[in-house]
Length: 595
Image 1 (cartoon, rainbow, N blue to C red):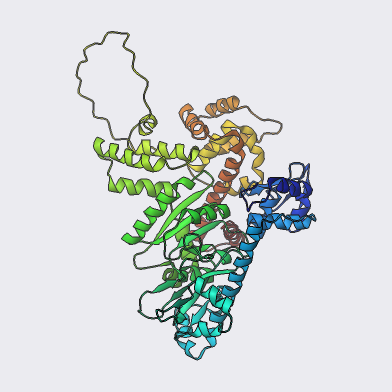
Image 2: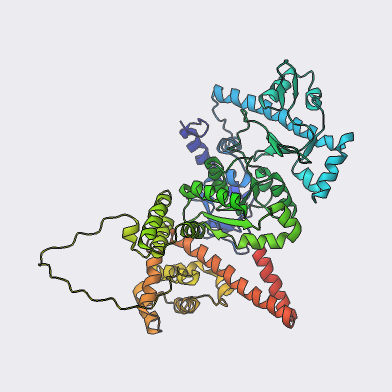
């Protein structure tokens, strides 16, 4: 039996065998024949050059840009925002098959449908209360905070008027619905045996699942009353550690590339109003492993956005510790800290969307935040401190899954504590040989050596060089991207330009050994070439193409960013020609397309 809703594996195999993935995807994506496969612009991210491939023989799809891949079931899950069982049911209906049902599952599904039906009606009730005679205060409050009626409607926001029985009275005479309200904690039983409404005189935020069904509610006061926020208690439908406010809205429209985890409902709503997609909030709890599992199924990058005060730093460190087991080379985690006294809601209203996007673009990568925080707490200025720092860091790094990301984190730690990779990993060194007699050592005072600057991690261009040195055939994946980064001035671009020149010669594909000789003949040091090779040595062969495509994409972003900065500076000083204005417009459009 399958673990996915107890559907037999044999049934899943049968519907996949009867499904043609090409015709399935063609129902929503315009595919073009490309040799044995089909190609298209990816339906999961913005792009101008097709990088989305569908294989009719292997019955799977893959995008070389965003790395989306899978079979027919996975495509429906990703493209239609379905869970596994729903995707199987959709495919089964498409090929004329019926999914075998477990009676227990059917009973649970029926109960869940009854509950969501009632809670959806509750959301409609709260939304309609904006027309209540006592709603003027709520409407004024939302306008004061800069919220538009359109945004409030998009998020299904509502108002719970003053009074103890508004919701209770609305469902009077519906015993089954009242039972659901009690189980969901929306009405509470008093000691006297009478019921009363949980939410009173609050702005209401329905917490919805990815399909838009209401699971619970959050209510915010409009004055200084406490608690500021009141949430539905955990119930059969609603578990705080599993739900994310804003997930339904984030899944609408184009595929999102990053999740922005914030702290408040208003942060989510206001960021959306300013056109910033993917903001989500927990319900008064810290992020959980359930949240992270779901998020990384949806997006490759998570940005945690916190206040810059001590509480924000503490919350960020907790999030960092929790996310470590989820890290791989294809998943990215960054941290953004707002000026003290600001939250995303107030910041975006005061400074605008572009300024907030700049903050996100300059977010601190997890690796940098981890080592900077540890180094601030345990300054690596003595052997004792460096040993303490290495031990503390190792406890954290060991939580990261095995792979290139973990190896590079250990390499960075070794540089910080001025030790070897073997030592910081705690591996035993080879035992010395005692075949020769020991000689008495003579003490010589050490010569004072000038301090050397710390080693820097290889730049993106050098990383691209390493990939091409290892597998020159990767040049075939360059496509039209080369023109987007040729003007870049980052360290390593000189070597990369030479490699591209050598590999782009008609009818020539150099071996790695010959390519190295050619580079040395052009004046590049053997040490630098070796460093480039070392940084990519641990990447699995099957992952080289994806790494190269991702690196080229980053190079394009860097190159276009540099050109944009030069043009913007020139615009301030002397103005731009029509051609330069058009170029800047194209670059800004390109940058917008990759957000």
